Length: 156
Image (tube, rainbow, N blue to C red; front, side, top):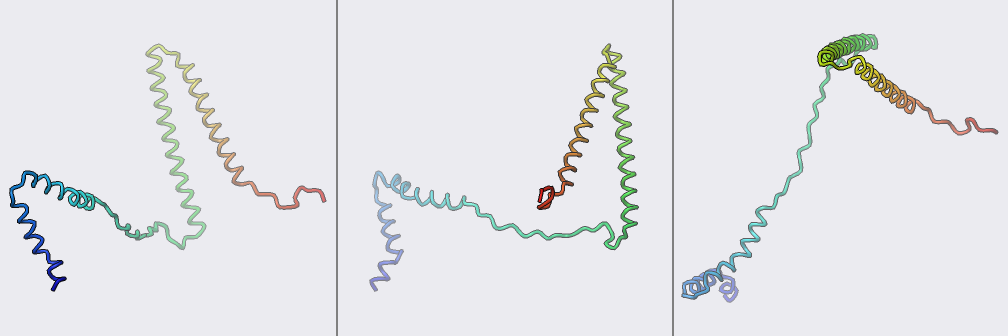
């Protein structure tokens, strides 16, 4: 019997109600200070964000090429793709040349020395292309280098 009355919340609530009803000048500040720590913990706990582990992605392989293609079919497709690539590059070069001609006409109309500007731009383009060729050669050279086997180039 003692344990039932000791842990019964009804008597505690009744006691709290009797104390809060009594006229006391500090009852509301005391009540606010009493509720504040619990409210703070509840606010902190409700603002915690926990993310669940993301779902594993499902992979769908898209095959646009027939898996049983012959080498001749692959080579023919590569040639067709190269022709398309060459046509695109030629068209881009034609458009770039047309732009240069338009800027050259505009510069001439504005009284600029368009020949000197064109020579400078050609030199810059040539330097850029040379650097690109050198970079490619360097990459191919380092990728194509075969490490020496032990004993090569050494005297017996």
